[in-house]
Amino acid sequence: MLSPFLRTRRRRSSIGLLCIVTLVMLTLLFVSCDSSSGATMRDGSPPLKKTSIALPRDLLQSGVLTIGSDTTYPPQEYIDPVTKKAAGFDIDLITAMAARMGLQINIVTTGFTTIIENLVSHRFDSVVSAVSITPELQKKVDFIPYFNAGESLLVQKSNPHNLKTVADLCGQNVGVQKATIELGELTMASKDCLSSGKKPITVIVLQNQTDITQFADIVQLLTSNRVVATYQDSPVTDYYIKQNPDLFEVGGAIVNANLEGIAVRKGDPSMFKALEAAFNAVKADGTYQQLLLKWGLINEEIPS
Image 1 (cartoon, rainbow, N blue to C red):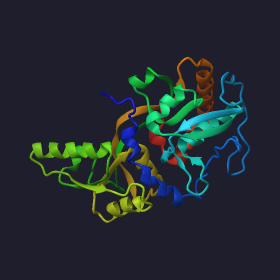
Image 2: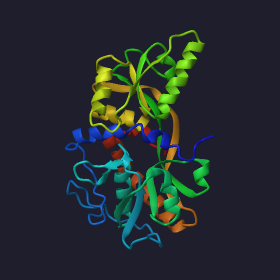
Image 3: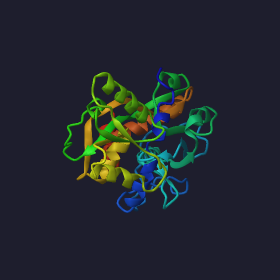
């Protein structure tokens, strides 16, 4: 059965990306997301012009869009270690959407496992937190799809071992972070290798998920040929490649992809219609695609 909180399997697999954020802080343009700064970009550019979108009737705070997000999942949402403010693709996107409605944005950090219940209890106006759209959650909230994420292999540039799927990893050394669904999948794939008369996969488990050296560990594993690939969530893979395009690429295609959505309480049509119209507006004017490019997540774009 598909878990209603599909993202919980991915939550633990990307905490180490915070170190990338530190390394590239000066090269990314983050969007401010505290209620005092509204929709103004940190690079000093003016806020986007308000459109004719009808405002939601039941905002928790007048003139402010209050968003729940578990800000521990880079590159989609995390706390910038320098500014101490929420940042990431999801944060940029919802900030641009709020600007389209003429609203300021307030990001409320909350735990992922209770985030939907907190939305239903009116703690936020909406939730943007890489929430996978599942039948179970659709019974509780409505979704506006905005992202399509799965899992993928990170390999050296030119893919010298021609790795396309986990089935190609028999007899190879592969890196993965502990306590992730990908670790379980590699374990099962290794058993399949043995059943087929092939050598098992040697799994190199990365232990220090929150350590700032995590990204350096992954880079070193691949560049020193200690592993032929690492296996993680597709946004994480793509963000690694964004930072090191000359070193890495995706091995094969994204697998186990699932749509993620902006969550809105059921029975709140004015909120749903306003957010849907705002999302359509940022798609139509190219902002959505620009943000995907900025964060290296073009593979996760939803179909037109």
